[in-house]
Image (cartoon, rainbow, N blue to C red; front, side, top):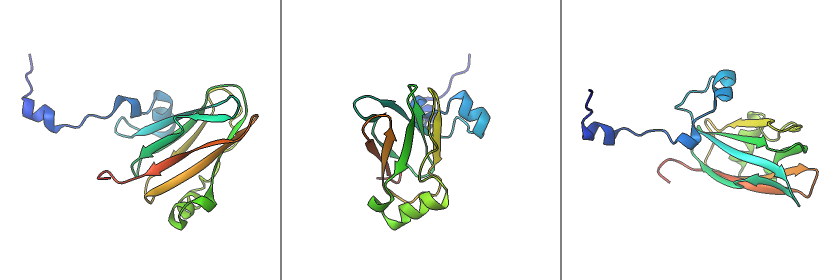
Length: 142
């Protein structure tokens, strides 16, 4: 039987199991269990909804919007409502808007590698009234 000293275990930071990429992202994008993926489930009710609608992430994290119904959804960042650095980051990385998410399980995956800290407000458009939310990029010390 292997015994691991308590000091060693306390010094290791284990990844949050909620943020570990699923098998699809690991096989298709080459992500590893060290990558952090935040998932926002998109659906239509009285308005377009993302759950959760607001998420705090660190630079380098990945965010995926996943359609959880059969309605059409599109994610568009509100470029006029963010700093020039954040706007330029999304435009330079061609992540300012999603293609239409046409079916249950469709994904829009964004990488925030080298993203500047700040607020990234977004809208969700589709079959019902527009909805929206916010991605906040902050450093690990904030």
